[in-house]
Image (tube, rainbow, N blue to C red):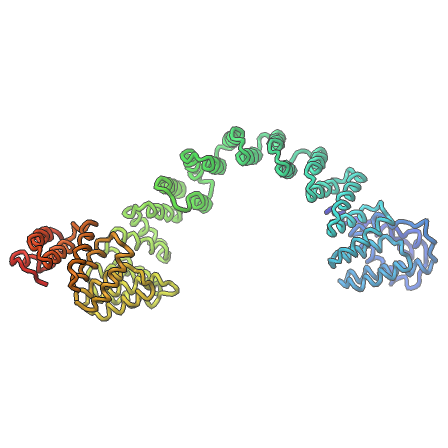
Length: 613
């Protein structure tokens, strides 16, 4: 919206205040040299009146004289001006309704007072009474159709009432009547844009450009219009014109490059990018932009090389670089993409060697690439600087776990518990580590304590109960073990590991074998190619005396890598022995003896050629 010079009214006020009277532009004939009673009060009102009106430019164009209207008496003129002034005072107080009352009374005396209609329209518009605003604005231009501020208000009230033809037509009039006022021309261009007449909007901007010269804002707006017209070739020409206006500004080439890349003008896009590099070889952003361009074109290798150049530049801050990488490499990454991300994270660390964030990101990328041995010492170094960084502790513990280094996992998880005594995961890892290290009492203590800190995480609580079950069984506290397994299965009835272990331990005690068979079969159904599950189901059937069924499942266990397990091979021999296939049983026992995890009775079975349980 066009805005006038706010200081203008002060100058006019100074010029129009005379001896004993006040002259208002548009009211000069009525007020000049008229001596009024209570002049100080009237002057005070009218000074405020002019300040308000002329700051809005309502009176700067004057009120239209009404030659066709019967002349008002002197008394009527004074009354009308007084009422109008009081309306302005009420408006200045924020009393819009009160102001309207005075305007209406003024218009009863002089219905051809364009300024009063104008002020009414403004008030109605501010109250969202758009229909009434339009009617009042229309009356003001019918009385004084040359006043540009009345025309502006009429245009805007027409727009507010969805009368877009009038909106456009009025700004066309203003632009024609005031050709040097570019603000009106800009409003006209917007009116064309708003109503979807993009060709006329471009013509209007061409006129503005002729006066102001080529500039970035105008160019971007014109290109937007050409996009609406689906004419990107013209958009390219506009950007070229912008470049020609200042060929040393790399920003203009960046606009051209991005636009050409988006619209498939590949050669021109590359040329623009290369020009940016020529003008500003230290600019990291151009390499980032080129990386994005090549990535969209499917040229991953060139994209990667450009990204390396951009990230190696220390001008670009580290956090921005990391955000770029995170956005660049997200989702399910291929092994090649993971390697690229790792290499780029190393580039970051070399460009920002003194920032711990670069080392953290590099260590995390090593972890993502399963290079746990390399990542672990980096995480330890980072924790020396930031011991309260929980996420780093978590990644460190996961490194220990993936490396199956339970001694180190025990040490690191205990340290993590010291720093984060209310976080459950370090307790879980400490319990798991000690279970593997066969320190069952210590494992039990960590697991029992840690589960109390689990909040809104059923998956983790399930793992606590599952591991507690294994721990209690190792402590020969079978009832506590089974209770823990039951709690785990309440959370997740489809936990194949718990179902298998629970069933197997019941079979070892020959206890609740039907329940054990149901759980073992469920574990097989969930993971049908797991030799441990198949072996457990076969063994439960064996314990139930169902040897013909047991042989079927032990064969499946054998075929699914069970041939390397001493337990599976020994069970195979036991089942064969029960089926009176003793010669085959002895063969399987002898092979089992060469494998790990067979029972202590196996050698005695072979020596005595008897079955011991």
